[in-house]
Amino acid sequence: MRVGAGQALVGERPQRPLLDYAAMLAAFSRPLPAEGAPAPEVIEELVRQANPGLHACTGPRFFGWVIGGSHPAGVAADWLTAAWGQNAANHQAAPAAAAAEAVAGAWLLELLGLPPESSIGFTTGATVANMTCLAAARGEVLRRVGHDVEADGLFGAPPVTVLVGEEAHTTVFAALQMLGLGRRRVRTVETDGQGRILPDRFARALEGVAGPVIAILQAGQINSGDFDPFEALVPLARAAGAWIHVDGAFGLWAAAAPSRRHLCRGVELADSWATDGHKWLQTPYDCGYAIVRDEAAHRRAMTIEASYLPDAAAGERNPSAYVPELSRRARGFATLAMIRHLGRSGIARMIERHCDVAALIAGRLAGKDGIEVANEVVLNQVLVRFGDDALTRAVIAAVQADGICFAGGALWRGRQVMRVSVASWGTDASEAERAVQAILRAWRRVRAGAVPA
Ligand SMILES: *Cc1c(COP(=O)(O)O)cnc(C)c1O
Image 1 (cartoon, rainbow, N blue to C red):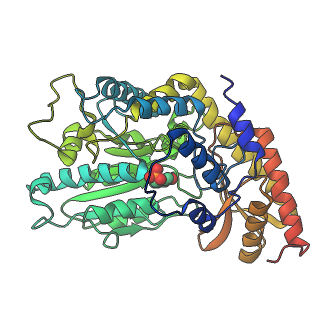
Image 2 (image 1 turned 45 degrees about the horizontal axis):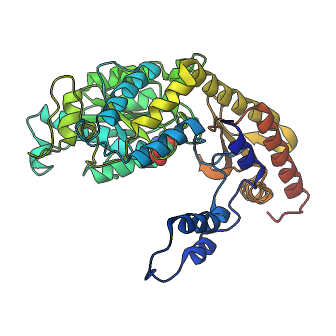
Image 3 (image 1 turned 45 degrees about the vertical axis):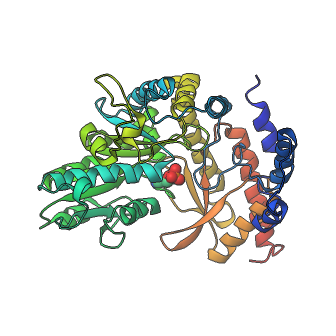
């Protein structure tokens, strides 16, 4: 198998969908089929219909959002996962799936430098991983004050104080909203220009707090890529008796790369961590990990019991004990295959290459004809600003229309920026250079007035 062949093809198609949602809806729309059709025809038709509406997310010059490249080794394992049809709920229904998760989970803890006693739930992504970890947090901080939230719900429970940085990821607020902790009643803590929680503001936010506390920290801000200062924040949170949760959807992977590990210093002192396989580990969608130091708290929060479901004896593991779902796909296979394929050193090299490429892109753009890099590039994220908000939006549109590379936009600290997120296994310095040239050309065209701002 030539692993790069498919990606090279993806790299040569325009780095944007050729047709938009409305066109796709029209392409798929038909009355409910009264009669069936042969499976090969159905699949061929699906390929024909879907192809123009596919985004080149797996390509080497895709820098949108934070999206991994679905590596062929993970994709192959995932095809088997689907074909084998294993229901990964429990170790009797799917011994291989349950065991693959157990082993891949232990590897993950070692790679990420997290406490080996932690338990791991294989979720759809970091959103559900955040929710799972925060469910464990909610249960444990309330259990300590004599309230059983799993049995009795939040009715009659003492209030839980939740601290979160003002630049936390939106899915953290979604998790709080789903758990009855409220997205608005949190204490939002001020951050610096990189979106890092300011320790003195954090200390002030904890002053006079009594009762159950959850503190939510971040490894890898979605725009700047930077990290909360765990070594300063964790002792403050500990002193207040807080459960400390870390959203590290992609940033936690810095711990797996020697040259970036310092960014995660102190992260292992937290109580729970959410991260993704489908971002930096390059597994196909969907794949995330909910990691909790206190296994009992994790299991209490996710309990599903029935007489027809097997218990897990000592040394056994039911995957469903650590995630919200009962039936689900066997995500452990793709995780196992990716870690086995890349190995510790391959993962480290890939992460370091992505960070080096991000620094290279920033270096090539900063200061060129008024281009500004709006963040300190510490990881894989580059925020680029072209003159003003309108010009920046025009450059983003021109880059996307041109289709050599794809980058999206965001508001960062109130200003429009172009986001360049380097997270695809096929991206290297030469692909980055092609992208830089395309971005510079787009900026020249916008400046020359060829593209309306
Ligand atoms: C992507 C991301 C999430 C959400 O993860 P999904 O895998 O999309 O569910 C949460 N937090 C951060 C920092 C992220 O980058």
